[in-house]
Length: 310
Length: 311
Image: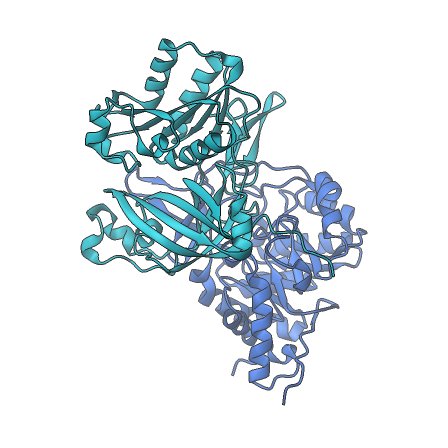
């Protein structure tokens, strides 16, 4: 038997060609990647964060490598909404991958203003609400750790999103991620994205100073994968499954096996992040690997894998 | 049938042709590219770089690991590492690239175990190299410590493309053992600091400076440059300075160039996660309309006009 595997997945009210996304901040606005990856082969593409005004970002050093991972503290450096529309959006037009714009800000009104302005832009399938960036002084994670604020910002942005898919990206830096996941769903989230990076610190023992200029950064990469898998499974079983809200799961995915683990745990789609820095085309390879796994296990639709943890 | 344009950059496999230790901490690695990789790397400009995946290379035997790197040796390597080139040669459909590297962490420690025939995944060539000379009659190359490779590459290019140009090179380091050149210390001393084989092979005169005076000029490479400029007539309009090295040294070179109204291009170094302009980690602060802005070392550089950089 050699039937074709149906790689389509339902996600937040839309059909995606396959379940593989690239994560925000790891593939820019797709314009840098032409030589390395066929963006059209992806199921979804999440842009680098966009804020209302341009941001220079943090002082350097902004990254440091650790065992099986890295810390980053970029500080939401981005060109700002107007330049994004002018220069980056045209490049995203005509993509077959569903384009999600990652939106960040310091105040709820800023998130709303960005989403409102982009709500009618044709190449955008939806938004990823970044309320979980650990590397900025105001906004970001301060919204994402408080259930009341998560609900408030989600519902405010939902009203502005013009019916486009609203995905809320959750921080793992909380006692119980199901609490904030539930708040996002109550606020009207169409999908949940988890996890963002773990707040972490690396110290230079010679100078006794933090390596990163921001002192702390967000840990990503293979080191966080088992924790992320656990959190996806927790949110799936405690919140998302009953609410019928899909999860974009990620954290340290490098291979198809890693991605499949997240789907079994309950993710409808998976996002590849740090691994793209090392192998810029690896997300596309992962799609092929998932397909092969399905063939090997006689799975005719990839979506049948979701939440099948025994 | 449409013919596809040749790739100017991408991810390629390279085969190791040699990997030899040239100084206690310095090694020279030869990589050979064929097919599309040979074409892409054949067009490399001095100052451009490549990202090497060294995560799969073996850790050296414990006794071969310097004492101060024993802990670093235990660390895993996740990210690729950026390297510039000391020499690039294309012949018979292959491109040979020389990389000069300093052993200072888990990745470069692993790099020393690569042997003839090993295959390495390479992304490149990346970034913008030094701009080609525009009618200048004299070029001054300034290499501080690990800034040596692109200056050797520049020497190769200038000799091939501008044979009538008057070129002089300055190579500096803390001490004679830290000079990333294959020339033996006794040769440097014998020739009174005027001889580095890596430049002499192109007929280029060179001067050596060591902070501790163990070879050549006693002082920094920038002191040596300033000293030479003070003793030689240089027409600023017809001269260009190409520099690579630690940031403090580049700042000093930029200052010397500014005082004398000489054009100067500097190659910057930054920690990078991707090398292709997506991770936003390798920022270089540059002047911009009375304010400053961050440019990316990997994409906008690594070579910048010295006047542009905020040191």
